[in-house]
Image 1 (cartoon, helix red, strand yellow):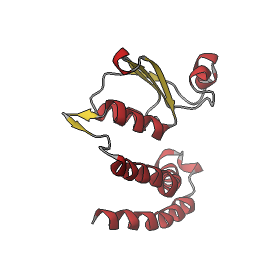
Image 2 (cartoon, one colour):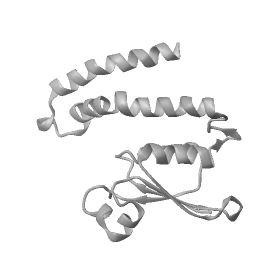
Image 3 (cartoon, rainbow, N blue to C red):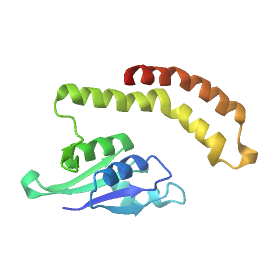
Image 4 (tube, rainbow, N blue to C red):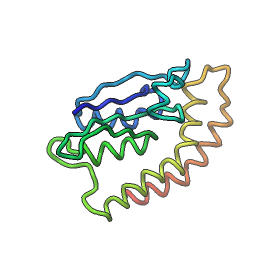
Length: 158
């Protein structure tokens, strides 16, 4: 069985890369930047017709139906790895039943819809972009908006 993850860590590919590393999986990282045309080649577009990273390519064993499984979209990749390879130190990280799966899906999609855009705005305008292109007022506004979902999360964790 072989597992390949296409993408770069400085992108949403960090989700499946981190998942695979946390699980101690043996995988091949195929550094595929989103700039410069690497995701527009015929070979890459055969994996993901959208031309986006990440992509997970998993060769499944014959005992599990065999064949190649191709998954794209970062959260789908991470959830797939958790379900199919999700045992770290002998403990499964995959949901054990439909109720747990619903909980995992709920919080996974919640963070993408409620937090991600504003968190990325803060990151870009505080750290990533060149100083002359940063707009502190955008980061400030995003931080204010993040207070609402962070309060929801804090309440859940109490």
